[in-house]
Image (cartoon, rainbow, N blue to C red; front, side, top):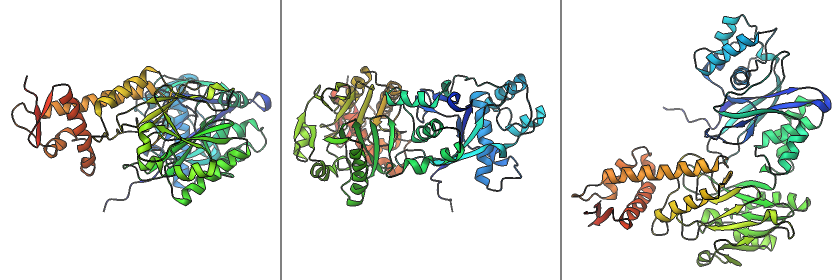
Length: 496
């Protein structure tokens, strides 16, 4: 019997610091636009545990995960920053650089590098600083041990462009100020580690380790950017997603986007969060719906009653649920009068549905895109007649022209490198369309059932019923462009 897939991937992270007191700095990195997980986000050095990490012998650490994570932290720090933490003694810059290069090329392991250079490594010397688990909305989840390490004497970090775009030393208060002004995006572990660092040196590791508990007290709060809070609600979207991201946008006045669940338990969690925000002087003014699907609208009625807020959506949404304000392309939705930086601009982005809208926040160059793009691998189902592939691709093209920096999708993880992500999805759709054309014949018509296994040979069979709907959308697009035509119950290439 095949064992069940693990919910989390084991990982480790290094909080690399230097200086004391007011001079204390932490080294962090910016993830490259090319990486699949949190591109463009700020992070601390770290990564996944590999087999060689797990094989490294650390006699004083009995727990297998902790032992492997400690070794992983040392290896990732060396690979990503060129700093060898956990070294008992000294090592020359040349030998560290040589080992780093061979690790990055996969030519050696950390244990082999230590043997080659005569290093005495002490993974047990890293100071434990907490355990974080990736939230439920993410398509890939990590169980990550954090470790605190002082910069070794005589060493300095550097970044080799690739998975990382850059790195810098930063004072925690300065980093938090940049975050507060909307200049940075990062996950909760980074935020709460910076807060702990800003609180002083005494008991630092213990305070960093308390981060997961502090982030969930009195309610769980995921604020990847200041003024943009993500609350994942359990819903029934298409697999593998199991949640819809409700977003709370703004400062004193908030827009609540896509409260997808009407389950009383799920609404209690949402209302606990909004009550906490209300105590800070932040109140829900608008409930905005990106489209009519039930995993986006389940909690709308309860939220209207709870907050006395206006429900906002495309005019076509009114045939599915009551709305108070019908919006069209280009309409502005101001939050907090006199603070126009928080105004949202409505973009009509049909394709997934006729009534789909996205929200553009110029202040942050952020796009709240509903189901226009997924927050992870895969693509969106386009289901005719409500779904339209031509309109969908046009919506993607239009959004790319705004040059957004961050995407906040309704399912999966928010992402930097927004334009790259949009362009990749357009390319993916066009590659799929090319497979459709190759699968068609100019003489013999082929049914959808015959075409799906050929066109979606990279998709699990259990998803073929949904793939068939997007296939139909591709065929209708090709027909509109004069490249394909219906023939009885099937499809063929159009006669020239």
